[in-house]
Length: 256
Image (cartoon, rainbow, N blue to C red):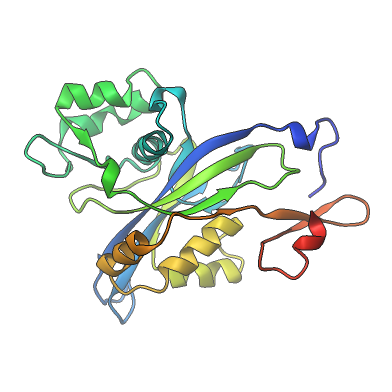
């Protein structure tokens, strides 16, 4: 990968973004493995994407002005909106307090929300829904390294997948999807089968510690507010980007 020379890397704006890791419990079986555990939902970004093309990620995207002025609520609202657009999962409850399930009229509005012809708030008013903002648990916080053409200040949230909703990629921004055990995803990444960015790998390592969704959610809620992680680019002598260093890497401080 060679750096672009037609822009000032320090002047690249850092845009707020949100990502949600949907998790569910799985029972032992031929397709899921010999032990009970959890699975996480992952999407493959389109090969035409200008950022992270072909990478396996969690549902997510940029925070928009329509998400509001309160920073915490705006990030959570963006996570729910992007999850609905990219995965078809709406983290919301009806007037009776039940989670939205397949067959609910609101789920048919996925394309309209994706195309911005229907605001998420308008969707909730129309179908008398309340977004599950407080059910999202903030587990990590990453900012794209200086030197990238696009930079994001991203919050990663954990949420239990609604049991009554199907999950599928949008065939637009994402071209494939899968439910996978975190450890299995990490093995496939190490084998070169699934391409991932460092934040995705680190969050999968966190999830791989748990045998149930309840355990993962409890551990996430017990954590203090995440400290921001600031990766740094490794470059060769001629300026070619050759990797990414994290704060616990031996060469991190030398890459200031």
